[in-house]
Length: 430
Image (cartoon, rainbow, N blue to C red; front, top):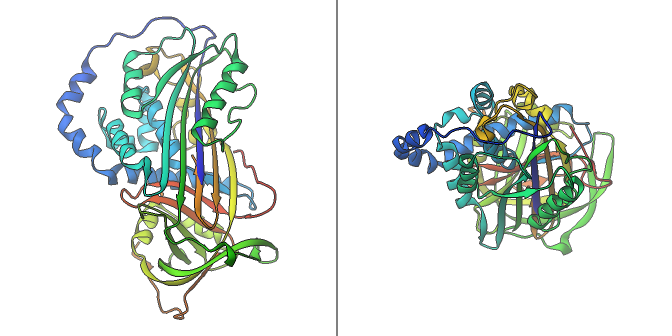
């Protein structure tokens, strides 16, 4: 099971903002009409948005892994983060927009093409099918008395299904925080709790933009719980612990990358539209090297060049809950204006220059067991080397990198590393 929750907080420079909205010239509507056919072509080409998502995934992951403690697990939903950024991007203008274009690669689209593409991909991805549940929910919580542009609200509602709910952040900030957290719990099957810490809501907050993703899927070939046994997991070359190790022998897509120096195993979920990809370094302490080499292009080529074979698989059961504050990391990626008071231009949201992005909270949960996964909330030297012994094994008994990917679009929905499968939960706030 996987559950992911992302919250973006928009803060105003003044406690009480001026009423009123900028005049709608109709220019954007005219442009949208002229580019309707181009937008249709882009929005139905999943590979463009999936490529943008996967490049962002490896970018943000590199920043997180660089600063994370060596013994810390990592788990994020890049698609959830990018979706929230896309809704924020819809209100950006001028230099703030240009910075987001460069960092998030949204500049590959024009007009409303990006949002139309998100809408089409979301429609294809989310829902209940083949005994798998993959759900996404967006919502805007706005401060009572604050005027947002109707065009912005219409865009986020139309393309992202994000309805607006007004809360009294001035008089009842704690009540509003609890109600937002309650909404998050409901959208994530009670797996993400207390996303907003005390004090996160105050009279300066103009809007809380929320994206929640929930996934629950069974393996196409399930592990037999009777085969699960205690086995060693090497945390380092000199330190190991006992974990619940699942086992099965079945046919799985398998490959080997000489450039990444790792085995790659694909474990499909029921219906085979979604899969978990596991990148297992050859060396016990090889995860850091693997992380530093991983790019979206290598992810694409290695995932594509797998071939089915009968494999004896050993995989630890694990459950992670990870939480991040991402505003500093996102700013470091090259879009500092968005997070700077008095500099950010989000006038497409409210017609003023008083808004800036003050907080980005991301929390993700994953539970991998014999039945499958529950979760809430991307080279020419790559080869498939089957000169291994014919008794092919994949023994994940040391730290590894993993992805959950939509096989139709190629989009990475979740990614992380398993460094510590057992013991106390490691919470890494960066």
